[in-house]
Image 1 (cartoon, rainbow, N blue to C red):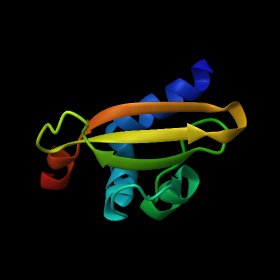
Image 2: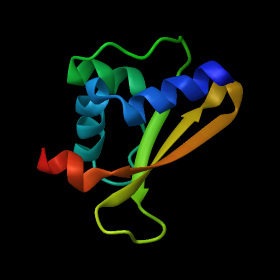
Image 3: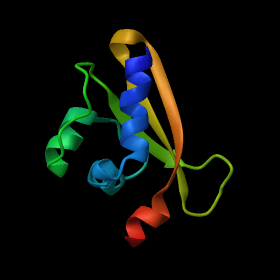
Image 4: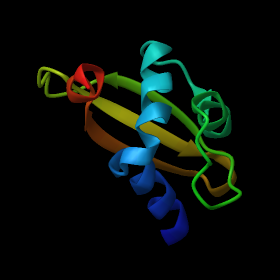
Length: 93
């Protein structure tokens, strides 16, 4: 499970994955999308690992302006991971 957490953390924190998140945010809220497809669309190598991961986003539950909740699901491992992300900062850059 640690490797899966690392993959998700990389997507949420590393600058090189910002195009992947930008592609996700263009899809609109609550649209589940395969991480591999987002990486391919963004022209970014997928984080290491062979797991199928789907991802979607929603408004931040605390209604913090500009922030969203990014949700990752790995069906094979029956695991989910969530992270709060500053979408407004990304869209301004």
